Image 1 (cartoon, rainbow, N blue to C red):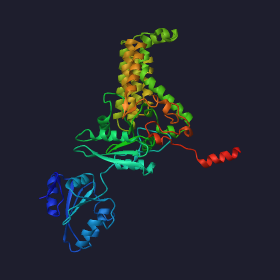
Image 2: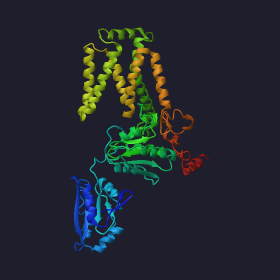
Image 3: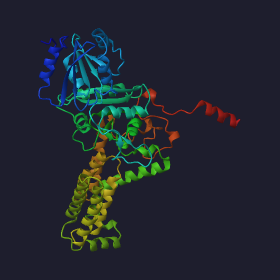
Image 4: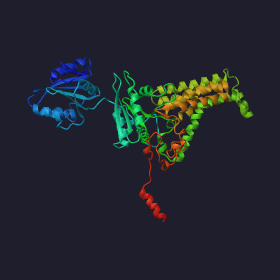
Length: 509
């Protein structure tokens, strides 16, 4: 009978007792192997190896750590086996002693092998190949022309290693949490120790520990459980599949959450301007990067306000249009059986349907479906006199504007907001558009992400000089400060070399 200490089952020295308990807990688990063996030069030592078949499929191969250990045990005496287990004299990497059965099953279900030996009241957790995963792949959602092509994988260990590959500093910390009563999902918080604020770290840890749930299967579930304002359509976490983007934000004083089985990292805090930045903004020259940033803000405005403005003008404020354009609009709408609002809503929903269908269709066929479907539907609707050509142009420009926003989750918030402005402009005119803009900006101004204002740095211009966190990207040499969410005493990120300064001084003399 196994002893219990505070409801924790302690490992026994009698291997038969341990085996009986393990087999009872793992009954009907056909994917988990429980192998008995007798080791030692005279085969006198009873041992037990427990492992998941797929995760540790190479455990007995000669080139594996576990295979070398078992092969070594065949040739040594029982006393030497005891000494090995006690001191790990073979020097196998990542061997950990376990004292209770909860640790045993946690290590086992993480994809490791667990080794029991008769007469020893501890078990050994030996790392193995682990669960199968896709490995490092190319980024699909955040395409860039310049920069790394590596993307996060489904393995949280690989993802943290990709960040460590870019930030080779012992001050980069990786804190692990196991979340989910049944899934025991490994979540890692990655941050730079001397840059991130301590109050912020405590707040993140508190959020991660304030709920209990059966399982976390993706970082999206974690995001929804820990965000400040669950009712807001705007994301309070920035998501990325790019290790270089995650590393860049860590250097800004932010933290990154990595969730096992998810290729998307969560960057926190999330602020409005960060969603509008692309990874390659800091790899290209500041002139082109600034132009593209301005273009994205124009695209965001068009994707949100253009349908509402069109309705406001043709229904209430026709006097602001030139006469020729007004007559052209009226001629284009001749014979259309729907009202201007119904016409625009119908076509917008049709394009949303085409977009969704294109996402669900696998491979390159989905992109072709989106383009061809949009052309066919728009052309057929105009020829059937269901919609006017100008409405097709408005919907097309709106769709292009939403696609120009770098972050898909952020763009989806404005895609929904578009319908809000559409009805305001259609029924209240310019007054409705102005009211909608006021309500939207008021909501964004009151939104917080882990205590950081969502509109940073626009609400903190005086304290963010030199950070480059504005619409216009400053030259790299002028980006000498970190943003305001980094520690105050570590705000300086760029300093000129004293040697180079001295050379310039000598030349001037």
